[in-house]
Image 1: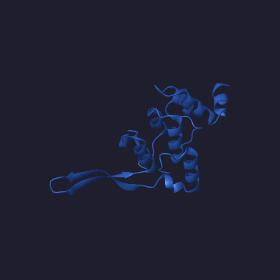
Image 2: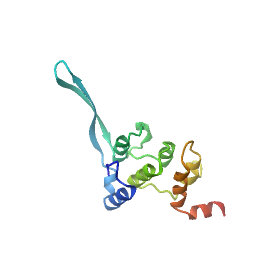
Image 3: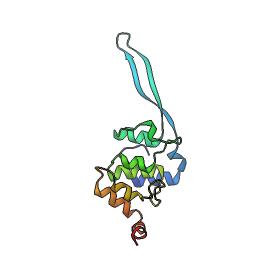
Image 4: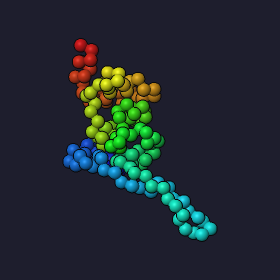
Length: 142
């Protein structure tokens, strides 16, 4: 699930087949200090990453460790605020199995409504969020 060219459908299949794949954590080297004069590695920085963090790193998307909960997952609020394109947002939704059919407990907005409030988010993203569960639109307004 860490292939940045993997499709959201591939990620969903993987998580459905092996739910623990979305919560695995691995330690990776994120920075190496090298002494050119002595021609040796003098230190390295390691970081614990989850599939979501690693996917974001591979895509070059900046994040802060405070964006994640203790299980290494991001809330839908945080993901939406990143302003990602639909395919990228859908990949994170697939990795984390986020539920798009539930209103936010804080503001009572459904994901497509929340998405519409984010500056710079594309209409395509809001459309896909809404079409994930079209009955929500009907229930919200009628």
